[in-house]
Length: 168
Image (cartoon, rainbow, N blue to C red; front, side, top):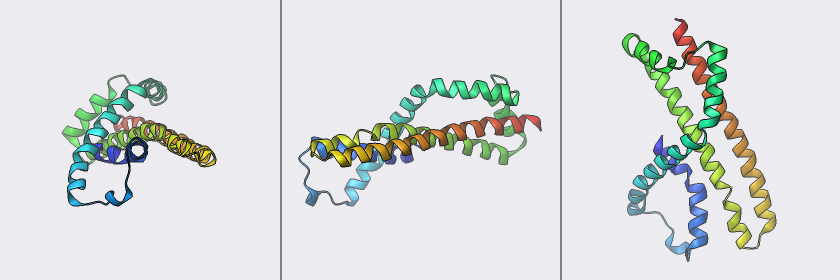
């Protein structure tokens, strides 16, 4: 999850590097050393973005969680009861629960990365390309809104799945 989130961060980190450095396209080619260095960088970046995402989106997550608790009759400690129940009785349900938590985390990272990618148009503004900057903000903002909706859906689906486990 962290590497995926970290790789996704390249869409906003790379333009910042391009603007702030004396970029030479001839030296930009990929080689084994650059890839080897990039792996831990993307992992660490992914961890930081996940942490920031968990803090920034906590308010909205709590709202969704409260609505889901009411809708599906979940208690505040339902998740932990589910983990204990599934771990002791059904390894397939435990895997499914882990996959759902993972997909929510990846979606949360995508939301934060897309929000941060709204810095990309600054590069175009510096280059004097106002129309491209405006279009890129529009496109990125639409993608951001769609990703936000996806994150909410995945989170709601995760709570629904928890309720279904508790019923059985």
